[in-house]
Length: 291
Ligand SMILES: [Zn+2]
Ligand SMILES: [Zn+2]
Image 1 (cartoon, rainbow, N blue to C red):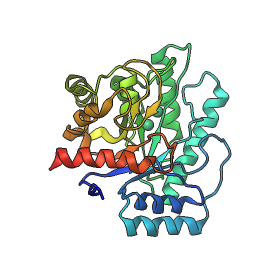
Image 2: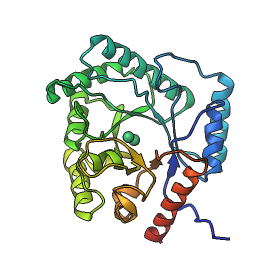
Image 3: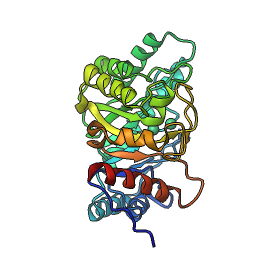
């Protein structure tokens, strides 16, 4: 039998299902040998709010401690669009984001990962200012969980596909509860950062250092890309099987700025075994690089 790859000294997890109750997600993560996790706290494609039962909250906390799963990232709903041209949608988005943050506090999650929004047809800078103001107003002073802003793939109307753009939003908000950023490798590649190569990865890391400081990098979404460099299309692929490729991931994971922060996979789940296979690929790369 092939020897299983040992989990390296890096925080690695996958976006995990909460089907059957949020505490089930921790069991699933532990079963996959993960030590960090990302979840949705409710259905991400519905405006409807549901309460998490108290018994589930307690069980979630117990299991987290038992299996050493930390930090916990809550990915905010895909419906949120703080830059929408519709003031009704902005209002509903602010409300839903507040709910996401309350949920995160209730389950003791450290971070809420947010796609700020997009505004097709609007001036990008103006849209960003508007979204930043809405974001600022959504943050309840008494909460604990921090927000991290995710880079996007550069689709039309996109306002967060560059590091400079993310820094811009953080500067406008000027709020401690916005802890920093999440870099999604698929989105970075699709938006034009050639992170599969040394030079392109350096460009990205240097921009983070220049515009906000490397301590603001809080999370890596490690995904391969189905589409080519600068495609502007957000389609995730299994690690090593897309346009970034296995050598690309070797390059990415060789950078200490990357392996110093938690890594979450959001790779396709076509098959029951897909998460395990993708994690094995990442563990194998990390073990070679770090040992
Ligand atoms: Zn992502
Ligand atoms: Zn994506």
